[in-house]
Image 1: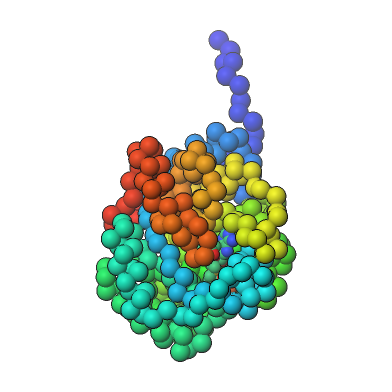
Image 2: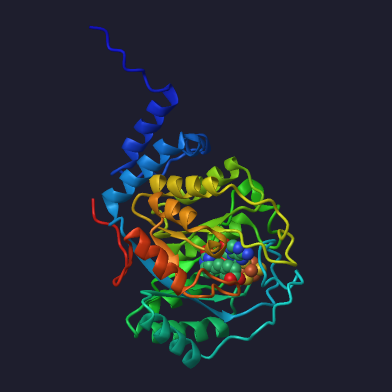
Amino acid sequence: MTDTTPEPPAGRAIIRRMVVTATPQVRHDWSVEEVEAVLAQPFADLLHLAQTTHRAHFEPTVIEGAILSSIKTGACPEDCAYCPQSAVHLTGLTPEPLLDTAVIVEQARAAKANGATRFCMGAAWRAPNDRQLESVAETVDAVGALGMETCVTLGMLTGPQAERLAEVGLDFYNHNLDTSPEFYGEIITTRTYADRLETLEHCRDAGLRLCTGGIVGMGESRRDRAGLLVELATLEPHPESVPINLLIKVPGTPLAEVDDLDGLELVRTIAAARVLMPTTVVRLSAGRAAMSDELQALCFQAGANSIFLGDKLLTADNAGDDADGELLGRLGMTVATEPVRPRLG
Ligand code: SAM
Ligand code: DTB
Ligand code: SF4
């Protein structure tokens, strides 16, 4: 009898082979062409791969909850085109100096009571000086003592500064690559891609875990999104956390009027991040306030397993606890009560 089952298109077979080798053996040698092929698969195939990979390493109904605090706001000398905190853009933001440790610790206590396992502190600096770094180190020490995971994002770090943060027990350093090396110059001119990679190297050398991702929806191409994912997935080891931010279009920034990204492209980017970095916690980060419940649900289905809780990110609005509680309830999902880690193997 003749077998009438149609052969899958050649591209699908190649992608399946690529992914089979990616799970459980984690790869660090992805090319932009390979990742473009992963992103370009039929949506159902990509989501199936992402969900299979996700379930192999994580509990699919549990989501990490982090809370952000802007510990030093605005007046940043960098010119990042997306950022409301850049002094170069007139966004009407009121700058605020570095908060006292006692104030930040109170915020962390409230975040813990609100169900967050990680407290993330962001400062609008190009790079902290040693006095500023020391103040943050004291704060990290105090927040860690509450039994929360700590993360800070302070801009560029020197090697000794990264070591000091490791010494006080910092769990994660957040420093994003933002976009592909090719598109980067359209977004930031005041520091280079190489500067960013150097800070990541200092953090790794100091033994810190990385929270490193980027932003989509800035007018980049799919190839740029593939380029960003390649930069992340060729880091060895992969970042333990990868935040995928959807651009929040802030009036007064150069990207305020950029065209909306197709939501399904966001889902594809998250699914590809999950496939390429199977044991990484992928955060559906900024931009959820503007997303439908259905789009967020698809992002979770694609392997996103972390969100920021609360009404506020650093300066912009976040989805908020009421909306999140309702959505997670409808999806049968819960916020993790312990730090989220991949299963071994
Ligand atoms: N100044 C530090 C730095 O840039 O490394 C830390 C703070 S900065 C606000 C942290 C990250 O927030 C950026 O790398 C960017 O990915 C994200 N971000 C800033 N503004 C955003 C926006 N309007 N929409 C989405 N993400 C944004
Ligand atoms: C990250 O990747 N996203 C967070 C966190 N790391 C520091 C910040 C999002 C900022 C969104 C714009 C704002 O609130 O100002
Ligand atoms: Fe400054 Fe960070 Fe905003 Fe860039 S993203 S302008 S470095 S606060």
